[in-house]
Image (cartoon, rainbow, N blue to C red; front, side, top):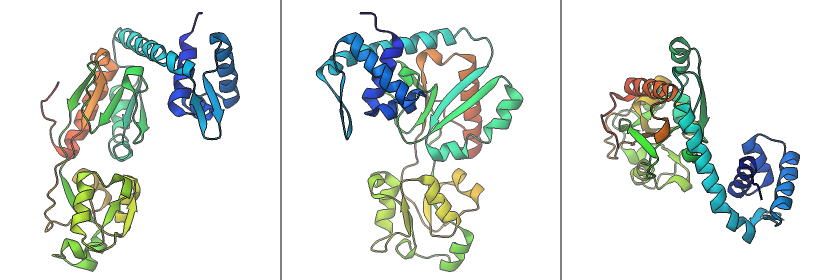
Length: 297
């Protein structure tokens, strides 16, 4: 049996998304094409790989047996691509960076004119979302994460810890007056599924019995609510002051700063286009938060 890597990519996409439509969207193909190729793969292996149900795809025993081999092929393909990328002599081509939506909005648009002027053959693709991406499978070239990687093939650069303060629109600040205690402030808060993060927990303690003014699982939606005067929220200065928000400097926010890590596949760290983007990110983050610490794994 001669299983091609394209077939394994299809299988892994179906396994991870749990649906043919999700797999088709991930691979950039039509759903009809995805269905046809999956049927052809099942004919080739001689087993049904997924049972179809109303809730999506259910892996069969045959799929469970195939999974580790497909994952091994994915890792090998990613390593091969990374090794060949090292032959590049100057920064050129596409660099895909996976980042949370807030950073995608605040950090990367200012980079675009710099990229165009400094590296005209370089193209940035920003993958914004709170979903994880697999750098080992080359779903992205770089990622900015709040958790340090543990896999040996991934290396990281520590970005500055970002201090957190309370901010609000000047009109809201004027309406409440300086010195208003936290329990009398209308707070913009993360939704219930995100209350585990430290600064969401701080707001929970600070607001007392007062209901939140607005809640969301979207940082950008929350900040926009603050910009429109809905209340106060916690966020870094570099993501507040450029949007007209002012610090409630009498409120002492005792939460640890947010730690960020720029994560790269080990085989890509010396590739010219990757090094160029890392340097650009360092410059932008330094402008927002101060110089990056000299910490590496």
